[in-house]
Each structure stands twice: as C-alpha cells, then as structure tokens.
Length: 168
Image (cartoon, rainbow, N blue to C red; front, side, top):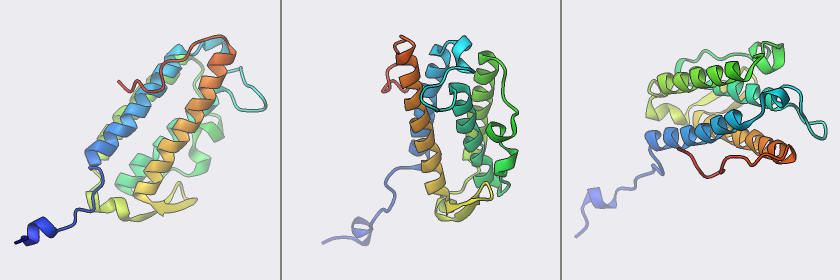
C-alpha cells in the first residue's frame, strides 16, 4: 500500500544550491577566458561589427548585478549599467577584479533569496518582466552567448581558448 509521502510529487528539478553551482561553473569558464584573452586586444578587437570582448564582459557583469535586485528588490536601471553609461575598466586586471567582486556579490545575495521567491514576477532592471528563475536563466544564457563570441575572437587571434566544459 502506498503512503501519502511516497505518492507526493516533488516539483523541484534542481535545488537552489545546484543552480548556484551551475551558474558559478559557467562563471569559472568565463573567468578563464578573460585570463586567456590578450590585454592588448581586449578593449579594441572586434569582428563583423560585434562589440569588443571588454564590452561583452561588462554587459555580463551588469546583468549579474540583477542578483541584488532579486534578493532586495533594489534593481539597477539600464542607464546605471557600466556597459551603457561608460564606466568601464581600463585594464584586464581591473576586469578580473570586478569579475571576482561580482562573484562575491552573487554568493552574498544568493542566500537572501527564499526558495519560494524564485516563482515571483519581477521587473528586472526596470525594463524586463519575468520570474526570478527566468531572469537567472537569462543572465546565464547571456553569459554563454557572449562567451561563445569570445571563443571566436580568440580562435581568430590564433589562441586556443580554455575548454568550454571545464567548470572548475
């Protein structure tokens, strides 16, 4: 005879900790890509009308600030974002420092998001309506998209990029 407990449906596909680990794995790959990128091309090199790698990284980091909005309800607007308003780093070391600071911010704010809030509807950056979880997935997808552009850039410069599957 089945018990009520054994027939209960668990609607959780992955845990909050697993999603954070997945996201941080992508961030680890992206950081390796930043490290591999030649500084002399980071702020100038582009192909086919695409933005420079530094500009792509700034967009990734700006969108990642959404973690604070998800946790506190205080969102940056699009006009406050560095990739739009021009507050950009000048060196690769500064890019890496900002990247590491953003990683710490993710870890800080992640634990402030109660599991039930992942289903809440938010207006991300004052412009994009969606659920907390869909916004997180968008931020991850955006990072993957721009990282793929950087893989093309590195290969066009004759540099073998780090393995896309190595998330450590």
